[in-house]
Image (cartoon, rainbow, N blue to C red; front, side):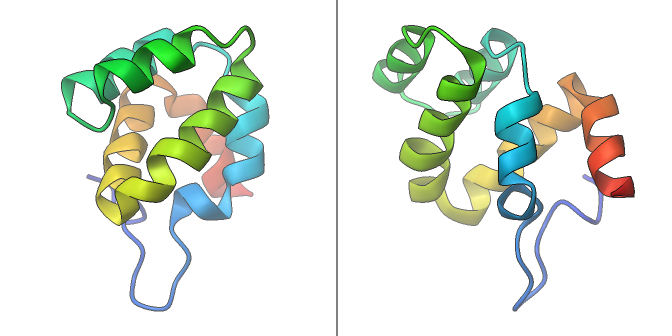
Amino acid sequence: MNPTSKARPGEQHFVDKHRSALIQRIRRFPPILDALLDRKVLSQEEYEAIMAIPNPPAQARYLYSKVLTSSGTTGKDIFLSVLEELQVHLLEDLRRS
């Protein structure tokens, strides 16, 4: 895993720091949700609830507020590793900013 994925003590997690950009810029959620379900970050019920939401920004807001917030650093680390696999260009852009 990339060393910037985990927050150091007293440092904001990458996912929290770039929350707004991630919400606005992630466009293909099904592969991300599939990976999070496989890695037990999402329950089947949460997966279905998010898939029922009609647009990616709303899906991202739900994922962040209902799932990632409650799963803590571990869930955010797993989410970030999924993004490293599926959204590498987005993460590279955010790391440069």
